[in-house]
Length: 473
Image (cartoon, rainbow, N blue to C red; front, side):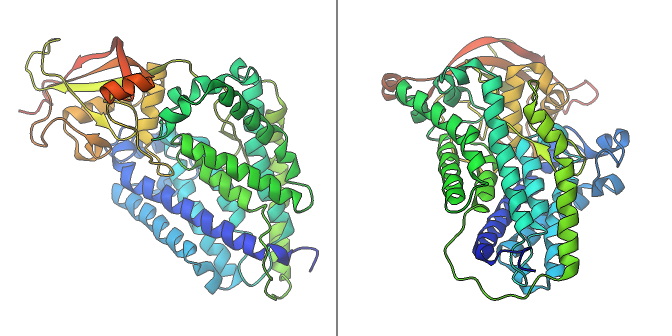
């Protein structure tokens, strides 16, 4: 069925699937290394407590059927193993139907994680990985040429990602319309990277050019994805360059990387396609049925995208098959950070020996230069940024975080860069204070060696200790 497949994109499929498997691997690794402190049985938002109140039909997940920390670890590490196998090309060694089932495994496992991950997994790139991962199941392997309809659906996802993000900016903060948002964004973004300080200090006229180029890439270029080659490849290449620029400017987990992976699906790489047989009838029927389902489910995301009350990063079905995306509809002008401290003193006073906990990615010590973590996702660090915006964002988990620090909980401390207390000597009290952070100037950086300057704003959480009955001796 020559009308159903297009052999010129066989190398495109290969590159897309291997890159997607790499993103899957990072996502599962993130889950495996962080889940105990976040959603484990003694986590800040335990899965068992969530599944008691949320039925399976609203959040389909293996962990609705059974949960233990050991079972979660097995699923997460199994996801890593399958992703690594797909990255190595294991699907090409199997029959078509078996290769499709192999691609279905990481999608089902990661869906199970996301659907019980609660606020820790509420980011748009979770749904984006699931939507792209579901389409990858139907791309086939070396036994057939890539189906045209699936390649189209991948471009449709990329279109919604970019165009939706462009619309939310134009409808949201006026600084996007005035081309001034980058005067603040690099300083106030959730988790700056090692080059963010330098991006912030670029000349302001260049910031205007950056914003204008971003608008062009997100509001005009997406339509070119559906034009003939080589225009579609050029459009995808421009999106890739833009995403790489964002990779350099900050830590956005795998949002930029999964967008790059989607853009690769629109690039036609020059190569001589191998000769493969026509697609079997059962495969054609399955792919067309899935395509019809996904196009039907696109109604709600399109309606949201065209609405003046557009919302960002929302799933309209519990399987995350078709979603709506967007980022930074508003940009903060001032950066606030919650600084968590502990003391071993029996009576907490202002002059007590307060020692600061250091996080891996979020700003803390003004002299500590940010590191590059993306595509690895530091979930606690990201949520701490939201906590600084408003205590309401942290109401469900911050108290438990403090409790775990008072216990010197091993799994929680693994999420941090450094704890100021020995493992066998937990603090008596923990407090949190809110600071305003700003980047230093070139002169201040030379004189002090600090990339941040911070000013105390107010108390965020007063000195807190464990209940008397629970206090360690």
